[in-house]
Length: 170
Ligand SMILES: [Zn+2]
Image (cartoon, rainbow, N blue to C red; front, side, top):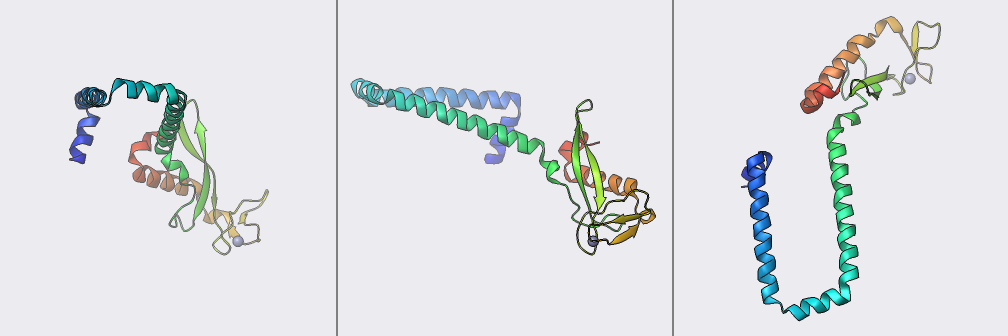
């Protein structure tokens, strides 16, 4: 039932039909409710609590809008939480950052670094050196590490895991 409704909601005709049913249904319910409750009773409530009702309505609307924005944002950018490999790629674990490229409207892996297998710290390549080195002075010869191959493999993996956003990643 739920699955069927969701499918209908995703199609333009279906969603319009559901909205209509909800709209007509709520009109009917409101009419039914007001016919059951006396008019003076409703007027009394409105007179005493109108400020509270309006304030609550405004706060609830703002809350719903914020929730919705958050949901859309987190759904849109879910792949950005990936900043570290779960399994070894080209013999190492890697960490990186994401950079947004505005002119392409895509995200790119930036500042990719292998992680030291002895202490878990990120390794960098010191100037004029043929070694990658972590802050605890563990070293790997730099020619043993192929950045381009690793980055390619990571991007491919993320695109496979987040197929909806594969066109968002360079
Ligand atoms: Zn280390």
